[in-house]
Image: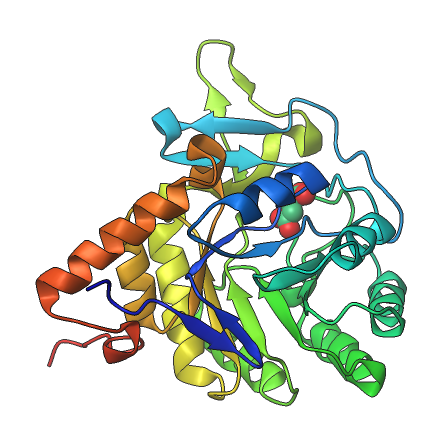
Length: 314
Ligand code: SIN
């Protein structure tokens, strides 16, 4: 019998554990339809929308590194604008949960984006991306704890729909304490961790040059090489966040083993970016069968039997 591999966030039931990481396979309506058509897709996340459409940063702005073990990107939030994604999400009924990701490039834009969602007929989940490293001249908001607190305080004065946040990776235990203390004050339904590891650099030794054009080559690092950072962030946040805030684990997933590890750390769902770009949505079917095989071998019949139960060494 197939083990039970589902998740619940608020009122939303995910019959499969796999989402796309925002940015990958989700910029166009066709991308989102392709994700939905795939059997093991648990739900979809839109490209982070701004109020108006953006072309994003100049090309080249994405480069695969270390033979596919990683990626560097500085996309700069290319998207078709909030209305495009709202129109799509309101155009039909969905049999899988939807997450509308938004990323304002200023305090006011974040508030306006969420006001428009609040005033719309959209009833799915929303995710406020506080972690894009690639907008020239703009900091990653969630590294500024005071501003993060200020934005969320303002948001929850008017936003009454299900909402979570996407965070950048943290690297200091004190920072996990600080961000969790802020997030725990609010009725967030989920935290998605991690966004790319911001401002990495990759160099082509032959040409003695950087490999992407924006920001003199600095960009967010993703792919297999960020797996330990993603696991650490999910674990550290799960230990600090109140139980009503569910977790989406993102970063470095290429196999069912990686998914199993994220679940042990306490992830409710996982999302896949770099490797989804390499393999297309059918990667979710492979990850699901690999996860099922591990569970069967270990004698687990449900993910609830081991989710969050990572052991420490005595
Ligand atoms: C980008 O569009 O630059 C990536 C989005 C993100 O990292 O949040």
